[in-house]
Image (tube, rainbow, N blue to C red):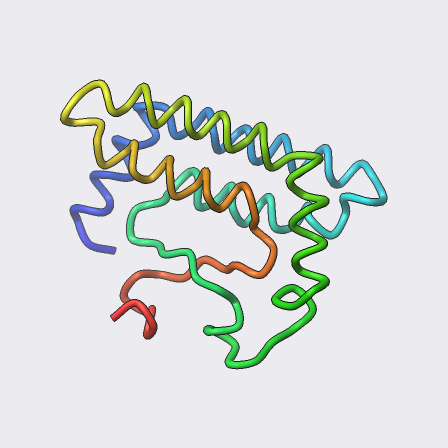
Length: 141
């Protein structure tokens, strides 16, 4: 990991990233308790890891990483995103947007606000997405 990414991640944790990471873990726990939400629980914990440590990571469509379509990147993925949005996506997005607005108040907070907006978009429709390290991302270059 680059030193700048490490420093930004530590500042992210101190300046509020912990709260949204805990929010993703809470969403994962709630999803794990229900039968309907069980398929989304693992994704919540993967995204929680991203919410705790976002710098140096990129969110991409899973079909580009795998090289083929699967159930999460087709019509079933769309249905999964709709169900996700109804049960958990909207309130996680609102939390990230509120955190982004709070970070945009200062110049130092702008990079953190941008990360919150990226996570807000991911929280609206996470099915069919995956998280990769920025240096390993072939499609990002």
